[in-house]
Image (cartoon, rainbow, N blue to C red; front, side):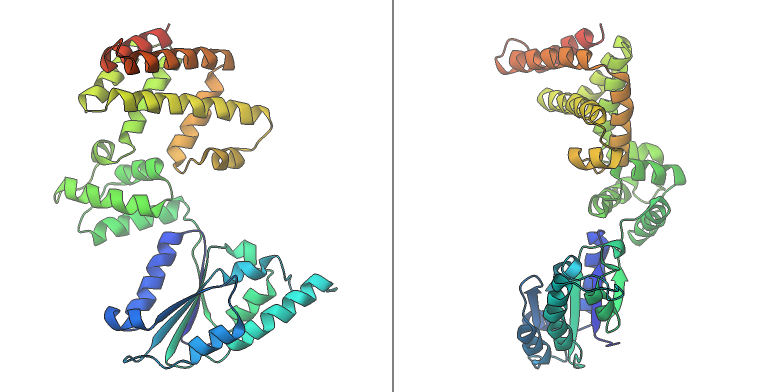
Length: 338
């Protein structure tokens, strides 16, 4: 395998990007690397383009970097595993297209680092002749979305890197709220470490600081509405308003949650499975999705229609100036709890 050739692929684009940055740091100074870096579109690139860039001498530096994006995806459907007994016209055409590309990458000089970047999981490409041939030439790094144990380790390590410490219950709540989006998780950890100021981050700190904490209270308020618990719903509304949440934003969040509930019920009735529903709704947080499923199971469609009418009336009352936002929301909550 070439010591200067890598394949980075997976749906965890945060870890993939960090790995690419690590490779860049190992090449040389940023100022010189910028002038010696070339990026190619893997869907369109031709063998001669790769060969010309790979074989070009670095400019005032020891090494140059060539990055090819989307090359693996180009051959996932076009070319099946070479282990197949019969090879059809499409597979033969795919082989004719990919072999010259593989040949252009077969002898990468020591002065070049070649990185093939994609967003495919192993299961997507394990049967690809192109990938298997490429993996014999390069160091392959996979970046699947992290499972819960992996996320726990990642959070603990990241907090430690930022100079902080965090309790187990705080880690669990953070994962529950943010899910596997490491871009958001990184930002929330930075905020939490600054907020803790040298103390250990506890579960209460996560509830106060993490951006999703306002959503938690909205979910609790919706739960209280579903249970006709007017006292609890009004208390939670007051808590949100005291924290400075604008009434218009709270109304939007309430409307969005009831819209989620309605869509979940509709998709469930159509026979959709939970992963497909989550993808259709675009919900990244495990906490948000799980809570929405639970609320949808307790809320009849007829009542949702009534809620929508009241939400619309409240929105009009605020926008036309008939009622102040805080008053309108209190009236809304009281009506929804009847």
